[in-house]
Length: 442
Image (cartoon, rainbow, N blue to C red):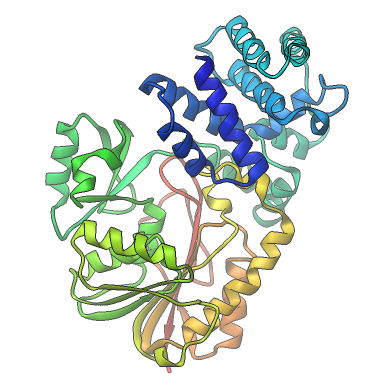
């Protein structure tokens, strides 16, 4: 068990203090470890759980660390964080065992630090019922209950109201399920459904997209033969809906301007039955390989991947596309359930800085659309300045475009805006997402 918890602390150090992505850091550590499946699952639970509830955990720890969190050895602080997480949120491990494990691990640093760990954890156990937030503050209560930074809670309240904000942050704390997309070029829904059941997966139909199957339980899908042989891809339904909003037909020319790793580009090609032209662009050379590798696995031949900065206009693309998809770089506030570190590595300044990039991409990409063609702007954020406000700005500056209404199945987690665009609110089966479809009519 010590090895599992030591690994978890090591991953958290990479994510919190070195800016690593949680999924990448976790996979790297696990792939280089000799942990069994049970311990791997424990590490994964502890890492994502601690990142998810870091604000709440730190509020508690600040009451028992006389010199403050910033003056504690980083390894020891993360060890305390995972211990508090286990005590509060995991009921399978006895409290005394959690404390003893933490003390033993801390001894690898020093006996003195092990005494600190022992003292802090036992002190908390004696004060578990204490209130660690301001009872008179609604915002403090939300921050502590759902473990979100104050600035983010205030942002959601200002943009969605109190009830809307609480629904959003509650949805962003759901543990995400894996959703797979069926490759219609190689198989069909019924065949894939039956094979997944044969392989022991607990599954359900996607609630928005007919090509989606949600996996409730089962082994790593990317190691399954269905994935390796290109019958399925892993993709959230929200991302699939952005592609379906393009109104695709065979033999179209489609640009995917911010494509890597290529999930939407390959879905575009599948919906076009691998007939036509899909140009998948990204700014980084190493990411082009990811797009090409994905297309090869799925048996797709119409994708041409290349380097292109979506912020910079390329005159050779002028009015050459039937459809353009701009899944632009964004703050990612809609995918916190998958990447909880977003709570801690984003700031209001970053949210404002990225708007300029998004506007540049929209203006340049719009020049590639043929008259009568359509373009879709999408983000995985819930920040309205990056979403509705950007669309409003674009339409004011490009009168040759107009919004076209998007029609999805009515679900409680979909917000239809009077302007015609859509926000998908996060819940257990879908990421938070924004989609706007525009047609060039002259």
